[in-house]
Length: 148
Ligand code: FES
Image 1 (cartoon, protein in one colour):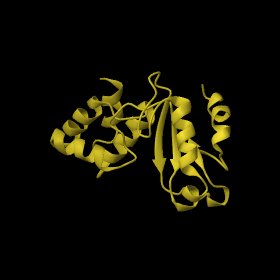
Image 2 (cartoon, rainbow, N blue to C red):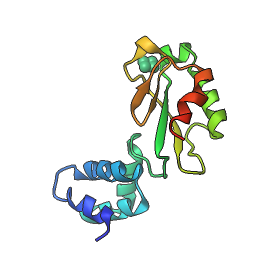
Image 3 (cartoon, rainbow, N blue to C red):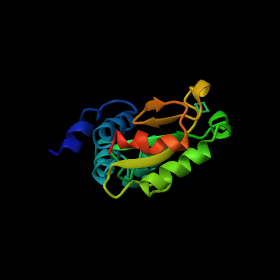
Image 4 (cartoon, rainbow, N blue to C red):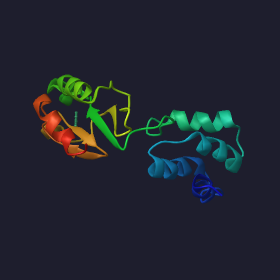
């Protein structure tokens, strides 16, 4: 049994277990490898197309490989007004990727997020869900250095 099979088997007899199983796989791999989708189809008795549909329906599940560090820029109005666009540009130019992409070394993925409830310290980014507050474009190289 592969590791993915083992993880999915743990949720096999739970109602709605497919989503929990995907979560557990993603926690381990940072995304859902193909094998997770084919295996879930088998275990939960649905077609592969249906299993894939579930995987792509939820925005927090990813079917493409993602980086070790997931950077999310808050895009909601208060962060936007506070200069989120400029921060995104700084991250894109520092990492050489666009929003939605992953660096070639597999280290960083850049994504957008809705308000994370920290509007008192806009703009906010998160790195693997850890928030960083009052970010300026000038700080980006320094912030990212800590993860390189
Ligand atoms: S709008 Fe960005 S944290 Fe609320």
